[in-house]
Image 1: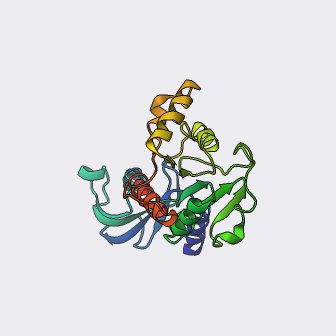
Image 2: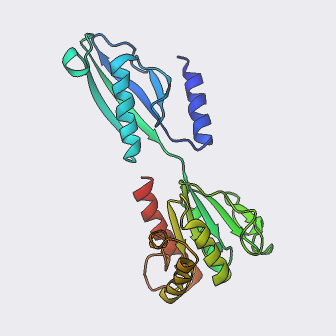
Image 3: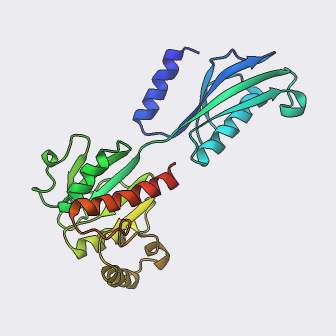
Length: 260
C-alpha cells in the first residue's frame, strides 16, 4: 500500500461528502498479517479499499467500523486476538486498531433571505459545520454579496417551485420565506422528504391553520408532526438576530442527535 494513494483517496472522499471509516493498525504483537501503520477504508455497505490483513480479522474490523458509523461514532481503539477461540484464526497474534469515522457535513438549506434568513445564514456559517445554501425569489435578497463567500446563494422562482437546492437525507431545511403561501408550499414539498430536519417559522396559530390545509390537501399528519414549528428554541425573542440564535440552537441540537 502506498500511503500517498490512500491519503489522496481519503481527500477525494471528504471532498465528495462521503461517509466512511478508516482502520489503522496501531500496534501488533506476535503473528499478524500486516505491519503497524497499515490502513484500510471501510464503507457502510461492507466494501473496502486497501487492506490491513484480510481474513476473519479484517472482517471483524469491517463489522465494528460499520457499527461505529451507524451509531454516529467518531473514533475508537479496539483490541483483537487472532486466536482460534476469538476469530477462528491460528496466528496467535494481537492487534490494536484505531477506527476513525468520517461523516459529511450536514447541508443546511435556508428558504428565505430576508432579515431573519440573512442573520441566520451568516450566524450559522460561523460554526463551520454546515454546507449552507440560501434560496430566495427576490434578486435583491438572493445576492451573493450580502453573504460571506462560504454560503451558496440561489435565486429561485416566485413560487419556490423551480431552481431549488437539492435536499436529501443529509439536509436540514429551514423555511422562513416572505409570506405564508410560500412557506406552506415548501412544507408541502419537504414534509415527506428524506430531510433530517424540516422547520418553519411562525406562530402556533399559523402552524395550526397551514397544517390543517395541508392535511386536507393530502399531506400525511405523521409527516407534518415531524415538522418543527414554531421553529427554534423558545427563549422569548423578537429581533432577527435573536430569532437566528434560537433557530441555530435547535438546529445544532438536532444535528448532533442525527449526525453526531
